Image (cartoon, rainbow, N blue to C red; front, side, top):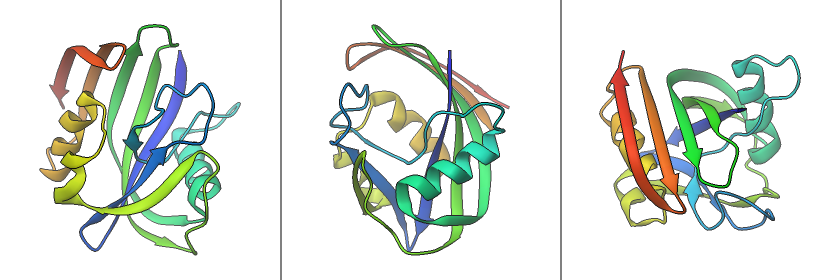
Length: 152
């Protein structure tokens, strides 16, 4: 089981989104997602979050919030626990990312992007400030076949 972080950085009514176009053999290829990545040995979720955001964006998070845990199961890929965060304060200059193209997207324009169907579920929860949650998402290819949500 992979352990990863995922962060949606907020600014001026937008989320910083990454269009995954540059990494080979990427389960997220062609999709728009937040930023984050896999834990390194002995890292806490917060250490992984801060490192991955810095590596992918050049930004240093100053204020972030743990929002939920995602269980991502996709046929042909190793299952993943994703520690989901949002961030509202940061410093630094946005840099180019080797895994995709970064772009600030208005929150009401997210639905026009190529998103995982399950991402639409948790993005709505984030936008509604629904509180902490656990969401299990099961896919066959790009098709969401099952979802289980627990609000905590």
